[in-house]
Length: 157
Image 1 (cartoon, rainbow, N blue to C red):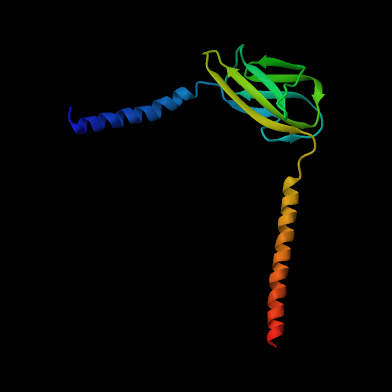
Image 2: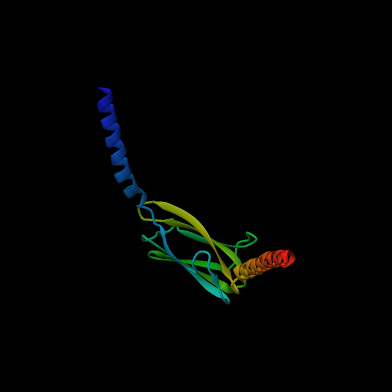
């Protein structure tokens, strides 16, 4: 086989891999939606979490919830409903940060794992404070520059 034929064969194999293998990767269930959504902060007590996947799930799919201190939340009841994994809490979740860890198992044996965080309680106002501090710093800086320019102009007269 000549070098040119090896190059052609390599291009065919590469092209076949690009178009064929991504189709295989989508055979596993992916997280379609979550309630509460990743990164969200929900007000008030929370009594249920719901994860919806791209494919129907089978037995073996799991759901765990941990607090911000990595302690498992007690009294969690997981219910599998076709493509949805639902968790009901014995008592409403108090304010705090939580991490959802899930494992989705499909009928073809494909397993997907993932996690995300959400919060319960009043939304954090961090960016409001940061924005206020930046605005105050800009005002002080502009005042200092303006005062310096005024002082230099007044001194020249």
